[in-house]
Length: 422
Image 1 (cartoon, rainbow, N blue to C red):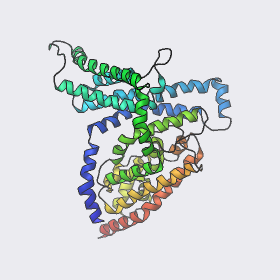
Image 2: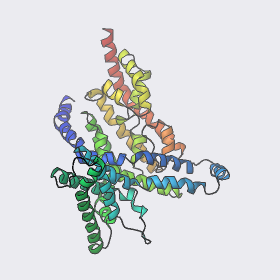
Image 3: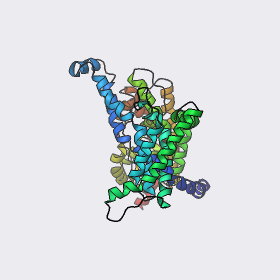
Image 4: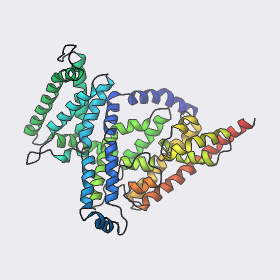
């Protein structure tokens, strides 16, 4: 174990630290997170419009009218449906801010560039089909490209500068003129070339080139399993592994989540098991390492005074999936004994949850983006669109977490207790 920990510390930790601090990956993560608040609100409306309770639909119709479901769908479509548009702004904004430049201006240029490459409807309107999850890959590429072009031009001083007496807002507008003209013209030309030579549009082209391979990697059982394993390995040396994994695969999982949402809204079979909600609600109960079981053990079964106090401090936050008090208070990081169950538990829970949904024992997630702070049982119920099977699966996962952590916790607690007695 010591040799393995040394290998992780000397070989894996430097790589993970570099990847985790990479500006472009951080920008993608932050840009996608920007749309999460409105998507969570949209998820709430989605659940309320489709609760599988006998007589619920008739009761709501009698109170709010027969069009109540479609009226609630307005909020759902207006939140999920602009995910890519918001991300195109957020990614460029985040990237440029990391270079200590004006991110808002770059974000606006990126948003306009995204609209330029997006095909119009037959009547000349904005095609909403590409504003949501279907346009995420294009949003990421444009956001990063605009951010880098903007940064290089400003740093090279290829901008229009105004005298010192000009108001800052006006001065920023003129600084953005050259970067904006270059970016907008570039993506306009790209749109024309793709349409002329490829007889398609930028979204469909990028979806074929990038979307299909990434969906194959991140959408299958093996890809999801590797995501869980790498998260544990990075965390074992103190790196936020899930942030790294999400920055690469979250665009795929968000698209799958939205496809589930569309199917759920129209009463069709939900197509995907893996998506953002699946991992947040079932695999990472209590946070990375599925440490809710460890939190329960610390709170209710500790003999060591040290562990008892940590349990009192960390249990309540952990119920809301905030794991830091236990992660760094026990600690978990660089603790060989606890890192064993920390790595194994989410793998077992992932396998159990995946096959429970694959076999139909548990309803698949219904396209609802449940807040990551949602407590267990309630989170599973909401994630599956109001199915009790989701709550039962979370309960099973909770027992799995307790069972795997117990022998390792017992060894550590006994050790601490003996030290305190001495």
